[in-house]
Image 1 (tube, rainbow, N blue to C red):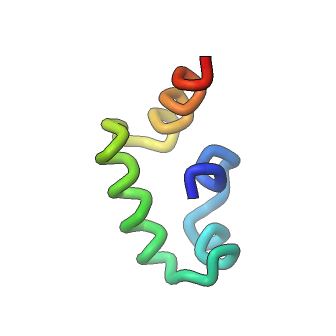
Image 2: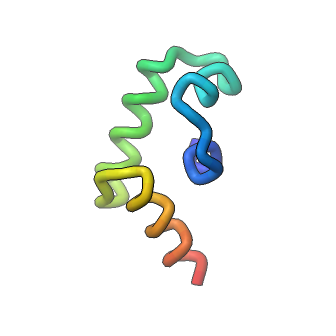
Image 3: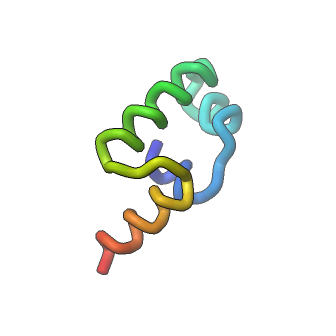
Length: 53
């Protein structure tokens, strides 16, 4: 799911790709943000690319 978020997919697009409910994707995203200590999509992208260096 991280890859989809980094690429800019919407929740609905991710849900369609993974055959899951948009609400499930929203919960996964919220948990991912919490675990990584970010509060926005931009924060997630920044953290991802900082870790790649």
